[in-house]
Length: 310
Picture 1 (cartoon, helix red, strand yellow):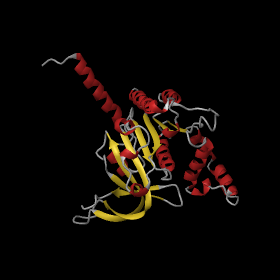
Picture 2: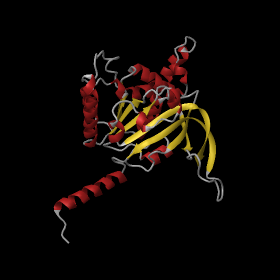
Picture 3: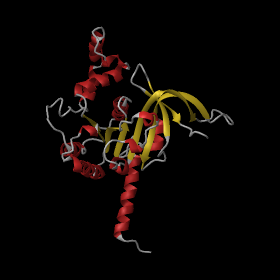
Picture 4: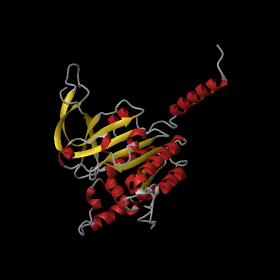
């Protein structure tokens, strides 16, 4: 049977892709939590990843922990903050380096300790600060940051970086009248996907979820709660949702320590991560119990929640 040249080229390209992965080139980058990485498929090159959650859930520290893990691999990355200044992010990085939230306080008594921490971690901060971009508004005095600016930032940085993070998309001013603003936002989403597809970069965008009043606010968040156009959830290749709640006991799957031992255990947690969608993992709609530490900027992964009634 004869094979046409076009078919052979496709197979040759596929073979080359796997060979590159074998030497670590363009392979998926893991999250700093093994279960989330395994079920979500990690950070894929050429794809758009969306992290969403209500305000106050710790999304910034969550995504910075991901950035630090990427940094540890030696892969280049850039982070564009749109809510806070670059200095605010350096303070958060200092909190992570010192493993204490005291670094983000502004009390007089702790100021000397914070100054000493800057000196103690000067080399690490100098290394990390180059990956955090100035906030266009707060640091550069730019009056407006719209969808054209956002696309230009991704396009200008994607050739030299393995991961690009924009936080949050809700601070982008979509330049349109109210009635057509969603249409402009949807055009931006498609353009962003197109840029990612022609790159070898993982695009991570952070956003908020809708405010949910009354009884609905007590329910777990879902992919439908993402703020803005529904195309974010429909078209992004991966959607991760981080939710916060009071400490509660939940049953999670676990690896039996011996034959016949229980494969479930009860843990206490104050965060839940939902894999709302993934195009390259088997974990869509799986929930993972997490805890955010009250004293230091850490998120601990406990295991996959056992659905109620099972």
